[in-house]
Length: 276
Ligand SMILES: [Zn+2]
Figure 1 (cartoon, rainbow, N blue to C red):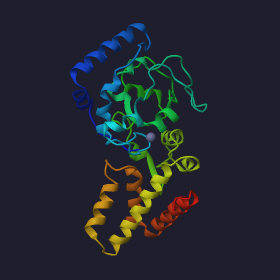
Figure 2 (figure 1 turned 30 degrees about the horizontal axis):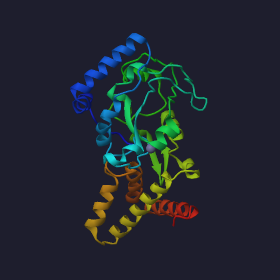
Figure 3 (figure 1 turned 180 degrees about the horizontal axis):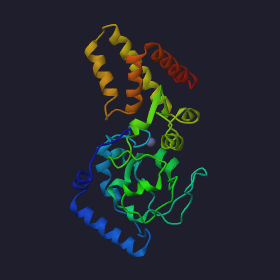
Figure 4 (figure 1 turned 30 degrees about the vertical axis):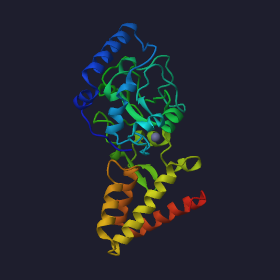
């Protein structure tokens, strides 16, 4: 997971005044009704804003879906705080609610582009919080008082996920003892537990292996420019699993023995899946 820097003004400029006007009028209707209530939404019209901002990658697992509209069916523009109801998650505090965060249905900092696995398979209408829910809140920054347990990577309204979530080889791990990092990893199955039933770890294991080989050849002085470019791109915002790559590259530069061990573990994992 990585942060996608953007300001509210930049998001609104990309959405356009016509859409914003319609969105505001709908939000006013929800305010009167005291809940989210409309036959169909209009947020799909501005999905492209988030696809471009996120370089066509899922906000949570960093898998690359692509920016071409042909890939639209493979991702959703999802509501970070559910708009219409809240489902319970794994017995976490802040359980189910019959209505959702209705005033955030059209807030630019309540959207994220996510892959089908993360949104329809794992997130659904779940939103665990450690504090008291404030369903009539309308400012995502003020709503931090709910102590949400998931990290939001768009803009700077939340903590930087890169500071809280790190990687050991192909598996996401909390960078410290932050409960939000632990819950976000468990919720989206970003850690080693994804090995059981997910190809996400397979993609990351390949990132680790490619980076190791690029570093190895770079150390040998072979095609220096080519491999430098490869290593730089792997960590860039447009690359899939760029945080995994950045954490592994740090190991390559700091501790080559450890880098070799993680490379070996990635190979063992791929072999165990018949992919090497
Ligand atoms: Zn995803």
